[in-house]
Amino acid sequence: MTFDERSEINLATLHPAMQKAMRGFLGVAKVICAKVGCDVKIISGTRNYMEQDALFARGRTTPGKKVTNAAAGHSNHNFGIAADIGIFRGKEYCGEHPLYHELGTLGKSLGMEWGGDWKFVDEPHYQLRPSWAKGMTERDMLANLRNRVSKKIDVLA
Image (cartoon, rainbow, N blue to C red; front, top):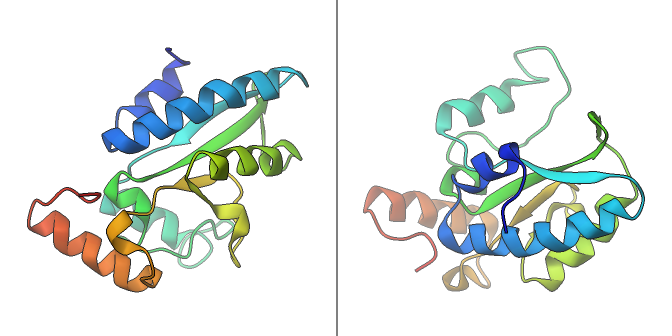
């Protein structure tokens, strides 16, 4: 199944396992959203460290609302195992919409973690947790992810 150009560009940046999970998610999510006249797209995939630091600066050292608590190397987006979605009504982005919660349930049913369950609520966010990281703190997992990348080890292997 092929999706809109923006989603396809972002899907292409993801780890193959995350691509597969998000393709399955997006196929069902589009049907759910269409029932109420909306669409859903993947608006963010893998981010490089410079992109992550620019987002981290928002609301801190640059104008805008804080959008992340993760600096470069401290976000699953930096490792290709996280993606953000957006719900749209026509061309209008809906930053808040009841569908985010419904889609969160869908994402979790497909084995992903959902940012809507976090203390710092991030409803558009989905990620895969590596099986080797079960029981690890997020901090320890991210340290291991950085180490794996430096050694060219698959982040999910």
